[in-house]
Length: 77
Image 1 (cartoon, rainbow, N blue to C red):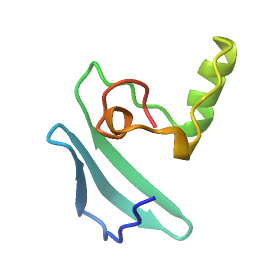
Image 2: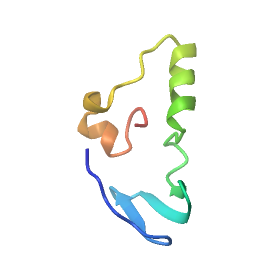
Image 3: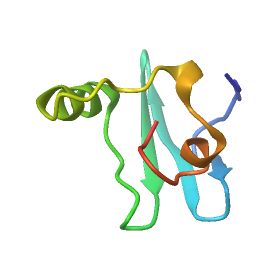
């Protein structure tokens, strides 16, 4: 797992099309803005797990993510 430090209004790029922006930090909560192509699903992890549980598909573990998934192609992390 890559761990990065960012301050409010700083961002992280994933590939060339996905941008994660730290919108704000308030006590123990970080607000993120995510810019991604419309064909890339973006979900909170608990929503992602619910979707896959409903579809009877095991959500991938962090170690299961291949390069195509980390780059935003395929299933979202």
